Image (cartoon, rainbow, N blue to C red):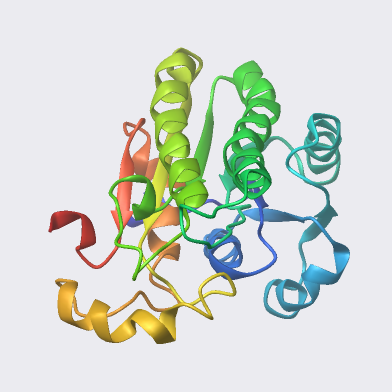
Length: 252
């Protein structure tokens, strides 16, 4: 009875930023649970790793800042795979610099991709979910949106602000869209090995070992289960939640 609640057989999922990193892990988890998966990335060249691991999926090129393109992608997903049930917003960018010197244009770009992009993708998907009275939207936020970080650990104020925006977006949309059966939740990962952190993790790993309750960064495979929980019927009575997957960082 309970294990079956984690199955997604025949359901359709779209993962923005699903070509690599945590977005790709989310796509892999959804596919393993039986979902028909589509992934979106800014450039077709980004799909090489995803195609090697995901195999049979729908690969779609587009920018989450384009409302018109997002609507076309949702239409294409539904034509090719069926009614869209799950959206994972994993598309994101960052820019590191001391806060005193952070270029305004970089903060603007990060906010547009991470916050505006998540909203536009959510609204495009939710229009269809609303018609059917059911849907799951999962934002990939960050512990950086839940607490401040010393500059020696993370010096990317635009990124932190954007993830705080994603946290607020999650809670507000959950309240606004719950009456139509649309559940909106978020995961707040800590430090995981991805392309975004490949230059940072070696510099801070020793400090993470000393300060995190679990004593290490996240490992590949440790986010997918949380994605699956929020995407599946197992979480049908859960909405507006921001779940940290952070080795205990937010418990400090």
